[in-house]
Length: 558
Image (cartoon, rainbow, N blue to C red):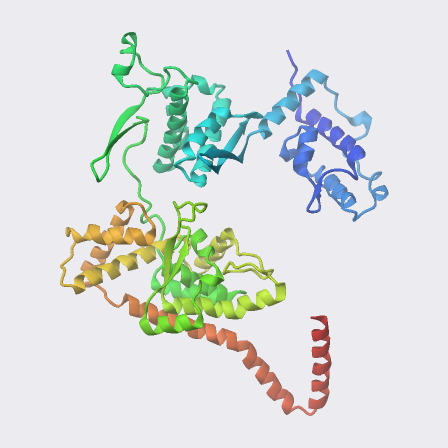
């Protein structure tokens, strides 16, 4: 029997190998961004990533980084850096068999991975994720994904790959092989997810993906009579009473045109549907005004406030709004025409559920005052950033260094300012809730202007929600029903419908435009005040001479 080994002895082995590795590769180790590549170190040593973060190892690696990068001569640190204690203090060495077992266990922990591969669909090449598990390429998962790549988008395929890797890891922990899985195992994994408080929607998605994977294995012959994908009459006579280890239900779908299709699905999906409506607070008009005031006081006040106005006005998701390019904004002449007619400015972007590679797009709509704010940012702060950095990017929202503002940075910015406004239980995404509620109100007002009487039981509600679903880029109206009920409840409480939303929006945006103008004029006005003070100063000539000399130095440096 192989003896167990203590963590102290294991650490000794790794440190010994790390010192030996440095002696042989101190000047030749793979190097990137000022560091010896840690992934290469883990592969050579056979350790887990946590070992390289221990307090005794980090200074050693920092010195190696400096030597490899040429910051410190090697002869100044090689003799002073020691990971291991003196030989008399070292723990007992382990035999080669034990060490090899440890190395395999550590390698197994780090060899689970997902990376993009390619799959041929007709004459086209599509991206398809490849799963590596226990250092073995999972061809079964890949063949299943290659079939789905014809109808699924890359993001959906990647999510499915993550689900299968999670499931395979759970099987490894339970010491199960994927070919031996039955309904009891799937149900146990489902309850494992529920114990972690996963939502019902996510649990059903996971169970559906796993069932789809096993259906494919049965249909391709990798499994035989383990998954129920056969009609009873298609089975041999002796198997009519056979109970499949993985059961399925045959569901019949009828399209709007009356076309019937059937598919096998898992019988273990959780029933009922959870709604996210009401779980997060939707910002009110007063809160939004406070947020804009706080944003104006930040470093990039005009950019941040104009960006929030864009989210309010179009109801887009993060990725959709941040993908807008400068060339898609109106010209001054087009903006002038929009202000006269009151029409919306339409920008086409790839929205959720669309294939970017196929060039699919859907519109984001902006009112003229919002387009004016975005142009003010482009011609002011953004133009200054482009001049200073030479950035050639066409993305609308930029950082100081000329690079594109990242999605996570937008979320952190808005979450922070919501917290400062005393509204911590809200998110950037809740602006979409505010947007769709206003859109439904506008559609209600339009229908009522044509003498249509609309209430909670009216057939017009489905028509209005269908139009709102298009505005929100939703596939169904089901998730929008609570907003309609909420609006009717508000109207009942307030004694009637509100019809001033568009006018109120124009007033609010006009106030923000005035604040933008004040911010852009603040610098020139302050400079003018300083010039007036210099004019009346007795040391005027001397000050102007120094300013002239300093301006010449700046111009030469530029």
